[in-house]
Length: 311
Image (cartoon, rainbow, N blue to C red; front, top):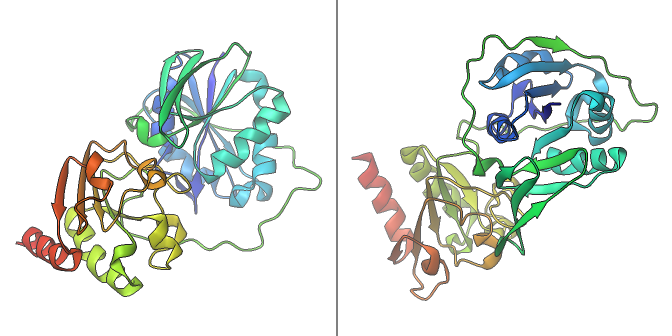
């Protein structure tokens, strides 16, 4: 059969995690198609023509806009006769749509897949990332959410993949999106960035968080993240939270500034290749997992680091 990847569409643009989920789907050893759905799906479809993609399916309908879960799950069910594996990024959309699809198809779902051993065997984290579980399934269909940061992105450039429109039978009582607010940013996407600079509660204020981290991130070409303590204190918005209840990242470099290293935060960033910690508490748990650590006051160190990078 074949695998179908549910693409994330953001304001007419393809989500940055799609190429990584396509890369994961290719490891299943079957042809890979991508489904781009939404009110502006056609605009994003061309970007889904990635290396390894057989074809791109496009479904445009008002019910599919705003990433509403019920219509998307229904659309996947309508297409299920041609596929035996369905994959989506383990983000807000994937975590909402794929369990519904699993219920509609009466099969199990495997969440947060970080490695594909073979067609029926997968690895994923459990116990807040404290352990990696290997699971094997024998069901006729696979429903997977993929931790995108664990897979390299597929390359752009399979010009032979056709873009094919597909019909959608609308639901009689589907929820509607009344309004949507999109936060615009020229920084890399937090979930897929190569460098992440994160701040914790030690910044003590929203002004300090913004004024110190933004220039540093600019110099490094980095995404900005935050600990849950910083988010709960109002220093950073919820969409910047890294951790068990936030986003999971695995950049080449993770710079943790003023972050103590609670297990919930570590679960979201310990996959980074290099971890650099700055904290005035020499006994902070973050230093136990850091590759490089600097003990000192962040209000002195961060401006110095930014200035050095500027030079």
